[in-house]
Amino acid sequence: MKLIIAIVQDKDANRLSNDFIEHNIRATRLSTTGGFLKSGNTTFLVGVEDERVDDAMEVIKDASHTRQQFMTPPVNLDAQLDSTSSYPVEVQVGGATVFVLPVDQFHHF
Image (tube, rainbow, N blue to C red):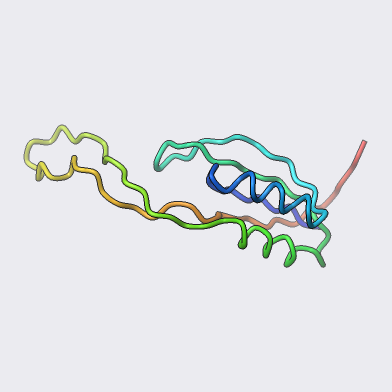
């Protein structure tokens, strides 16, 4: 058995949740916050048998999309640096960050 931890953007979370249901994959959904853009994201905890890991990974891949977004870098108080660093910059966000971990024991009470 494996534990899949999938972190996706909030914009993709509902679609992924519905796709998990459609493919009979049980998942626990947690609201989380990203550190880079300080924006909301969603973390799914998915316990699957070893033979279903590839299926679950394909569902996650299909539901998670990258997109471009503008962000304003944090204000820098160092006057020696170029002042253009405070203008919004375009960054790529989204997709999914996925960890697959072995499970030594599983209990359902």
